[in-house]
Image (cartoon, rainbow, N blue to C red):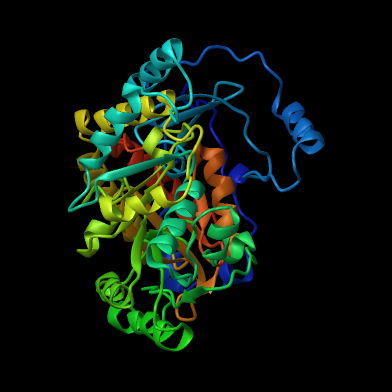
Length: 475
């Protein structure tokens, strides 16, 4: 359903803050030419009528029966009941462009028919543990996944989530090296279990799990970092940690190629090669967390680490790998993989037939529909459109990212880079009213995270950019 109701300017106007009232005359002159209310691209799908409980009823049950730690976006959370490719539908049948679900759950699109058929057909035949019995689904998917990696990264361990994958990767590194010390980057995010929370340093999630042997290195932040885009200078902090903070040996270094929760922050050029050398010289392994940046999302490469010219010792992934089903994976070399034979490691449902059937279908869809190329073309186009707004709105401090993993950082002062946290929330709310669902992140919670399904189109990109332009013009 397309949005037919005309939204008045008053309905989506903002109460101006002191910052907005003091915008430069140049910005106001540019903003005087306000864009027209954008219309969502046509889409040939109408969801079946919804007859379940209302959003208010569901919210009441959540408050009563779910943990208070469970949170939701928006002042009035959406009751989403249907999905098709890059679109979602609420209880009233209203359509929304999902510009965030690609990292949250979906890679090739909501309810992609090929993935749905694979899940349903496998579930009709068998859904079981793969610990004690053989099944073709897990072996076929492992072979297909291993073929996507360079070098000797050919052994796969399946898990149920990214958290489990990173926990397993850290354990393998410690067992293989016989060392306990691990280095991670500040502002990174690696999961919700004790070990992964220990190597996570993200203020928004208030992770204060202290673990011995975990060291947080300076973030190679090209926007706010003290060394700008000089990756080699940031890398010296890792060398200093090894020299002065450990016995001279480490078990592992873990990092995302692009920090997702951390605000779509690409690591500074030259950083990873220098760090990998330092860590390996100290006897450690290099772990690439590809939970958010992997599986063709960056467009230029299938895996985020490839853009840095490095080959990790261990790679972790999840979320999009199964298009939303609980599936994660750890890929490593045969030599490192053997270390688990010294322990009784198993995962009851990691790599179960239903999830691995979904995973194999996802890889086939990415290839068949050329989604990596689409991520590059559409993502580059959208990034250009977003960057062009920087001359019009001083609220935009930075536009960054790669492919369909983009971030827009809002600041109230470009020189001081003062985080515009309240404005970010306002923009999210108003974008939702216009039919665009978008995420946020960053150390200060002031970065719009744009991570749509890989089937995102140029008309979708135009609608998103136009909606943001219209929203900012009304601030």
